[in-house]
Amino acid sequence: MQKAVESEAEGVLIQRFLAGEREVLHDLIRPYERMYYLQAFSILRNQEDAEEAVQQAMIGIFTHLSQLTERDRFKQWGLRIVQNESKMMWKRRRQNLYESIDEGSSDGSGEMTSYPKQYADWRDLPSEAAERREVREAVARAIGELPGIYREVFMLRDVQQLNLAETMEVLGMNESVVKTRLHRARIMLRESISPIFAKPERSVWERWKRMNPWFAARR
Amino acid sequence: MVRCKTIIAHLSEYMDGDTSVEMRQKIERHLRGCRRCNAVYDSTRKMLVITGDEQVFEVPDGFGDRLHSFVDSMLANSESH
Image (cartoon, chains in turn yellow, green):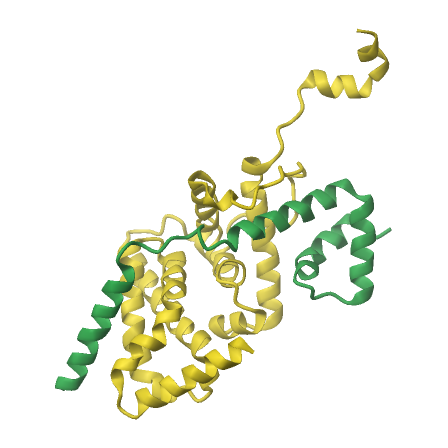
């Protein structure tokens, strides 16, 4: 319901923009600023470039808003423009390098983990786990290290919390591709951050004691 | 008993509430009896709580201000043309 009210208000803003009230663009983009930045940053991994890509995307939004026929889709439409601008910038930046140093990690052709190897139980995480700086940084770094094709899906679904249909629209991908990549992204990310959250291994003595309770009881 | 491999392959869909009723029941039955799959499920669930937290990624200070002043100058430019 709330969502419907929001997109209705958004529709009115778009209407006003197209009628010549250009300054409502500020109000239109305000709810999505954070999303725009995070999406650009997840591709470019550099603050300055991410900000520049978002600014370029604003020009795209400004110029093409009249072409947006389904006005309740401004969120995914705008994000798609940010996504495309960021990817274009990423390509330009890469052309400036003699050779790509992390081609494998960005196009997903590198080693891929689609089956778990770590089975340790995780500690019970307090709800404020994400408030701890080292946790935040480690998780953000691990997401940044996912191959690009998995990272973009993970960012939209599990960080930005877009639903499946919205994610498909932003990325221009079909359902099965989004689902498969999301699944792999989750498995890979879980693997890489497991060591941080895993319960400490029992000591050899404790494990032995569990296997031989009769001996431990005698001591 | 469904194999672990099948469970893991459907885990993501299961977490998104996107499996058939039959598959959901199979997964839940398996998770109750399989410590390893249950550890994978539980830790993935915990991971998603963290990654969904707004605090994991921060937007740089002043980003919003810089963005809106860019929009201002863009609008001013478009009017003068």
